[in-house]
Length: 385
Image (cartoon, rainbow, N blue to C red; front, top):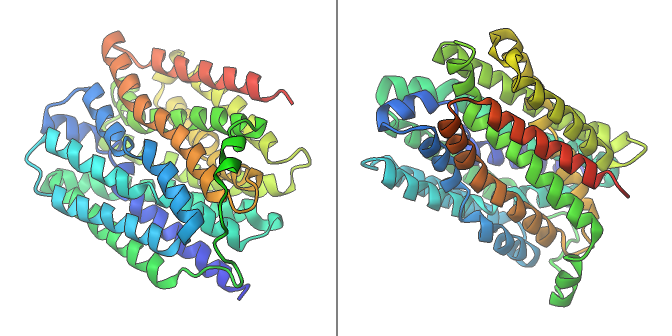
């Protein structure tokens, strides 16, 4: 059965990629959505926020369900909700109805992140857990890569509604695969959970580190997701098709980073969180450079976005492995759900807030500078023992 863990890792990664496929493609379709729906940057950011709103509470609920009932049906059922919502949304008449569809998508997606992470953590021991987590977490940017390659062309040729159909088909495939192939590790039984332990966990110092660093890196990920293509098009004078290809590269760099950085964390003498600190420093430097005139050069801007993809998106691999290993036995789902729920605050706020800041200031530098400052402050606060 030890070989079956690689099947579990493969199906968890596939399900992650398919469930996130449509939402990860919204940034790449930014130019098309703004044109077809007649919306500004702030309202485009709100689309991303809508997909992440209900997980604010849903992730905590999903974590408790996972601890009690296991991953197979909780994750599979959640991804089926994503597929059904996107299929129904293909008939959406306009912007407001699309917002409602994405709210429902977010509710279903609440099970995927903690459930997939928990499934991998339960099958792999600490010597390979970082690598396995990194591979599994690479599913998110890999879904973004596929979405950035396919959805802009599909939207240009047939309209944005067909992109929802594509997202529904992808999510359905992911749900079926997970429910068919996932199994619990031999001998593992869902434990009885004492509610008093959960309250005590909220005071743990490691949880504060997890929350602060997670919120920061998720803010960077979503900031790049909603603004990268627009920055390349407006500031660096890159045509929309080429800007979308750069965004594909960013997502590829993020997928690579999640694997490489997580594998590195398996062997880092100072522990997994030291890798997170390196990522915070690298992100602060990259964002600060992007806010300067260097960001006007097409080549330099593309390289900086690749840097931010590798460290900003890639950081999630060692981060989620650190979070899973910090949880006491029987509470992995709760800790992951709570940490990811905190991340959702940033996921909801960041796209719309940065979009609004960009609209109000007429430029992208203030948004990049704000994210750079956030990374620097988090680095300073969490580097302390």
